[in-house]
Length: 113
Image (cartoon, rainbow, N blue to C red):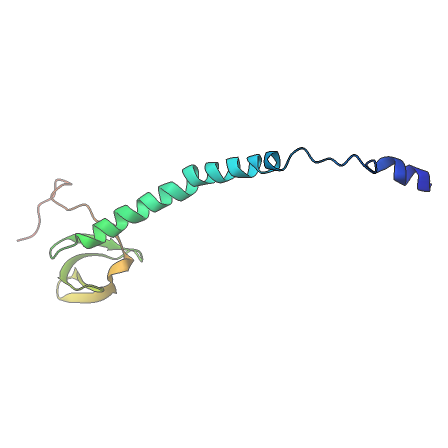
């Protein structure tokens, strides 16, 4: 019974090393794939979002990450004041603005005067 266990093991002097660098090639390839498919597009998206946040101004229609639609009535470095209904204003952190909303004019509707 013990002889079978020894027969299944590797030989004493012949270890299964196939070269040090060749063992890391699959890891390097996996990192490359993750970088180009996951990391790089996410960094690009974050850069675009930071640029959009930097270009916000009064009067822009935006959507927050919580789903609120509103028009910017005041803006500072960290806080944006949104008017979500007539005479209803809320302050949100500038980083919580998810994107610009499509204006009603571009959808074929006229803005109320």
